[in-house]
Amino acid sequence: MHLVPLYTHLILLTLGNAFLVTLVAVYLNGQGAPAAQIGLVGAAFYLGMLGASFFADKLIQRLGHVRALVLCSATLALAAVALTWTSLLPLWLMLRMLAGMAAAVSFVAVESWVLGVAPLNRRSSAMARYMLVYYFSYGISQLFIDWIPADSQAAFWLASGLCAVALLPLRWARTPDLDAEVAAEGVAGGKPPRTDRALGLAGCLVAGMLLGGLSALMPIQLEQLALGDEVGLYMAWLILCGMAFQLPNGSLADRLGKRTMMGVQTLMVGAGCLLVWEFGGNSMLILAFALVGAGAFTLYPTTMSYACGKMHGRALVRMTQKLMFAYSIGSLTGPVIAGMMLEKYQAGLFLFIILLVAGWALWLLLVRLVLDKPLGDAV
Image (cartoon, rainbow, N blue to C red):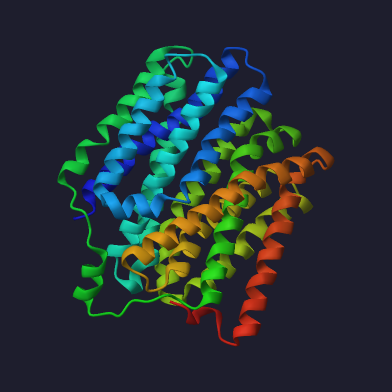
């Protein structure tokens, strides 16, 4: 129950921020902006996230989790409504970068909070609940595009209002003392081995490349496969399968081991892409998207909880920040590489994903061979 205010805050903030991310692209397209300009404004948000990953832990350490989230919510609300005051591209770029910074700090604060207060043997389940709340809110936010005219200022005011209302649940939230949580459990914290942290960082990089490529280029890939009329249906199915597998994945990761589930997720994504590559029928696409969605959307929380090991306090916040940095790098580079492959091959996105998960699977195998221990040993 002590996380209810935090999750309520997360729902409201995600509804506003995720809606705004889509709204900006739709609004600029409706205003006749060039595709390059729309892409530049979109990239500014993720550049802001990348930049914030260098100072998020210091800000959270100085302000505390609750005050940091208050600052992020207020910044996102002001940055959203300020877009209605000007049409100058440089100012839009600055505002979207500022919003990206606020979003990144918010992610680091929420994720370190969720991981910090969860029992060490239940961290994967805690991250699964967090991701389920996030993806559910993200999916609902996209419905606002159909309900509110994207060419009106009312849509920006709605996004700003949701971010502002997200401040209210924080009134009942209590800043967590992550060191005290561990002391109460009587469990000694500490850094996981360097190889485990490196594996977690690599996993977050792969997850960023995977999800960045899927969200940015899957609609285009479906059009190239002559499925342009069913883009929304397949995208919704992809996200729904990702949501549905969150809780089972978290429970299995806590029981069987996180590295075991990383291997399972890799096999699911690879098998789904191979089904499309070899067969490509509509019935196979449904099964393929179920496998890809379930595997791709659960890789990030699994690798994050694995990399954090038994960390607590400021060490946990710092590690969460590093994982956010790796994920942001992946989100920026993945769509670029996948886009180049999509230009050369009809199913270029799926080929990119196959090569990506094959490299990730090889990394997992090498780590197992070098460490000489079963995949399920790591907590």
